[in-house]
Length: 237
Length: 237
Image 1 (tube, rainbow over the protein chains, first blue to last red):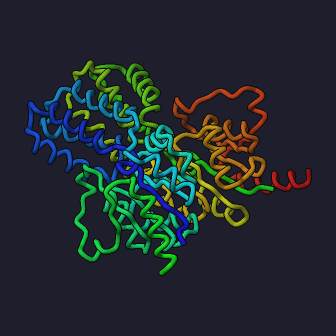
Image 2 (tube, chains in turn brown, purple):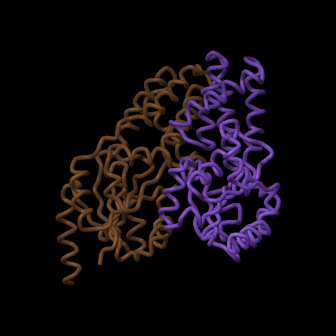
Image 3 (cartoon, chains in turn yellow, brown):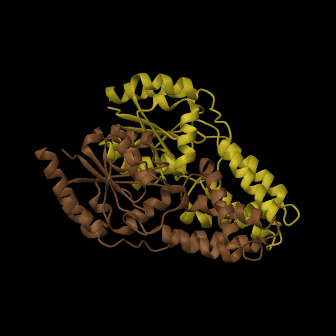
């Protein structure tokens, strides 16, 4: 009954947002001569939102938005050398070690024995592929998809590509906006496993009706037992 | 005998390098107070080469390299506002209309009637997908692959994914380095159709032996008749 279990990657299998938060803190320090933390974060967030249609998601888009925000916050007064530091930070992010979340490897290894696993992630193609390789988890996934954005349309395209019907598809991820709500809108199942940090552009408040349509677990280690119980119940019912 | 005809996109089906050259000219003007054209282009080319491992191919990587090169060329003296102009130029590139090469649509439409067509392009996922949609050509391609880089390994992965053997695969493109030599190295066939501009990082000088292993046509309009003649000859031989 369940053809594919798909996982998000960033903040579902490995830490990502914590790296962005660390770099944002350095960015706030860099801009301290021109603006306070609240103003800096507001201008950076606005630049990111404005630039998503041009540059999409990922480190390069974030780097370009930091540079744009720094110019705006300093009214063009920031020395170019300091913008060079933003470039250095973004290269540091690309090269940062992949740090798996607790239970990520054991959970994925266990579920790969009984199910076909897919990885669906969005962002920079090169950066995501590099992280997948360096994570050591690639061998557990039969299919890997890097998409520009995660919407009901992009999930429908993936399901159609692999000829999987939504009722036979389970998505696991940390973003209600990108991993959970678009999948349940298609008629698929979804397990929401919150990460302790949420990027402001991923934050959504689901309606009461939406809340009844997905499952929530505290951490990845609980997933294998949950999948077993849930599939047994679906088969029985 | 021929399962798939695959096309490169940038400078094979639509103009791309001409847009980069146009922006490079504006970048040279922007840096004129600090360096001459030759120096500026040398430093920019070096920055791009250095950044490919971090940022890959495409407009965002190019934008970050222009900013890095501008800081270096001006010894940090360039006003931040002028780096903002580099951001504006890169957004202009993303939003630039897709201009098809001569014969692109008629050639692709005609070959789609008799063959399975694939598009294989490298660069920013979002930007490439947007150009594919806006080109009006997507409907002729059964498969579309955006890859981080075009090497023998990445072609082998695509062929394996679609279970196509190299002898049944023909690649058409304007880059010897990315479209032609990796495919012939795998045992596939390749048609080289030069574009009038070549990015310095795509330029290679093929050996005499390599030159004997691919075909060359002057323009896309010649491709359908060539495919017909070549497949007839292969069937006969």
